[in-house]
Length: 293
Ligand code: MN
Image 1 (cartoon, helix red, strand yellow):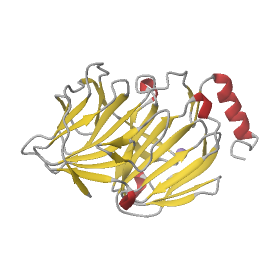
Image 2: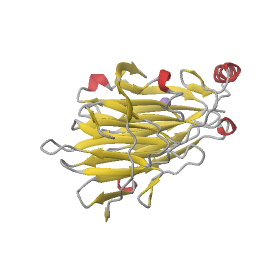
Image 3: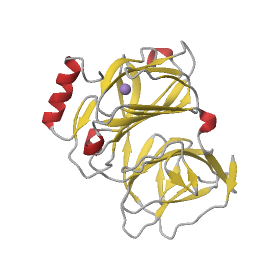
């Protein structure tokens, strides 16, 4: 991992709102925390959903996510612990291991499964949904599986470690770069007393999810564990300042930012389109067996 000089920003965004996730279950009874849910899709455009999962109990994850469809957006799975097997209707398969990232573009349609490849031990990670622009929703499906060792990463002099899952920061290109929504997805670990200035385009919607250690300081606000801080879109701010207090443990933050699409969002379950008619078409195509044909 390369060591880079720290950068500084002139003025940090502040925190507009703190959001605690809601405990829920999905797939075949997998327990998870829905951090970004449907009521925040407009505010955090182009991001549609963020689920966090983490459990040492197999009963919380063993059911996995058997075959189910998607259309109209992209899913990003970030594994922190445990192993999951992916298989889909486009013929892609992959084993997600700790540190790895899976980027799946559902496009016009995919049917896939995500099943645990372990019967005990810890399973933890995230799934983020990124919307596609109207003109890109019906593109052919695509899949990329990035092993942990291939996720670009850097450290700063004070020990802050950054894994660049998507986008570009500090001159480092992430594992995935995407046009249009320009998602920036960073997995950041700050040792006690460290600070991190992250430049962000003023027009991008952004949030920081504190998932380990805590409290963290995000734009001057204290943020507890398993809490999402929605960053204010201040036109005169050029980034966000993150910090870990002295005397605590290391703080872990998933930082997500992207360019809003500003298009209508119509979601029903696993389909995200622009209109109700397009949703009906997605269901009809799935029922006729041609969604992923
Ligand atoms: Mn899925």
